[in-house]
Length: 334
Image 1 (cartoon, rainbow, N blue to C red):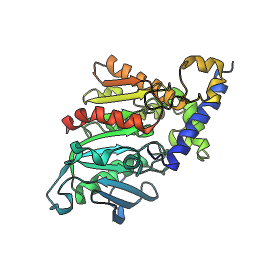
Image 2 (cartoon, helix red, strand yellow):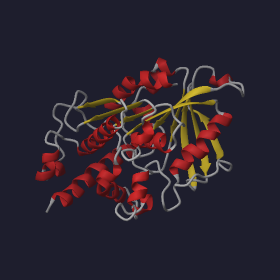
Image 3 (cartoon, helix red, strand yellow):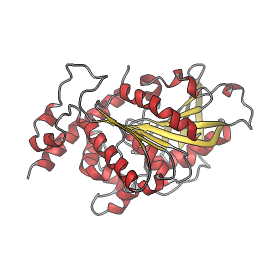
Image 4 (tube, one colour):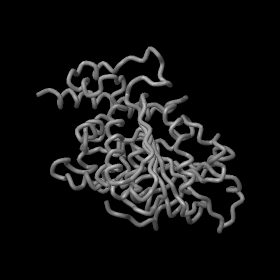
């Protein structure tokens, strides 16, 4: 499977920065109006895929959105609506990643569902930054969602899923906007960012964000803002809907090559290596840690999330498997 350049760069960033930050640590939103969002272009990629480019006031820039259209969509009438599966990409924000790396277009279960893959700026973290822009949540939920319902056949029966940072986005959106989505799924999601705030900030710097505090502020002084965007702390808002959580633990799994080597930065850190003794992939180990924390929190609150915690690394073959596993739950909610 093809991995996008942005995906490779982001995963490298998370892994490298996590290792560096761990070495140090282990040593002693407001809603915006959708009125002015504008469609710049619409391109049919193939018989099912349509790409939109939107001029977004919330982002202060243009952004791409990929639609995987259902049967009959091209001949739709204004009143026709389809249920919608929103699939969020990882921290690279690449709207093409789901169709490039995962077999979304080949699944017969999705022939009667409009699938929406919205792009976002690199490391946008599915949030309205304290700095004002980008306001990713407002772009996706206050601009894009109404636009699709006005002109592209999207109905109001919605479910949401995502991978890596997109897994975070799926749970955060469902929790921050109760009632908007009928179910949520996360595959290798970064679901408890405040738990490892130093890694969040370090990874943001690595990918070129000069002041990461522009996202949620300082994790100590602005703790309430971090918690207001953290699915662990918002778990009470997720107990009313079906939730699917999956992650590898960073150890080699069924889709990894037999000669996969452990990240040297990870292996050199004795105390932190003890935290994840069997892992070769630090990125997935961090995602696993946060996924387990949110799963445990939901259970404490009386919810019954579907949870698959297995071996495996931070890579698309695992996300494809987990998408297949979660589809019955997601489609039942639609």
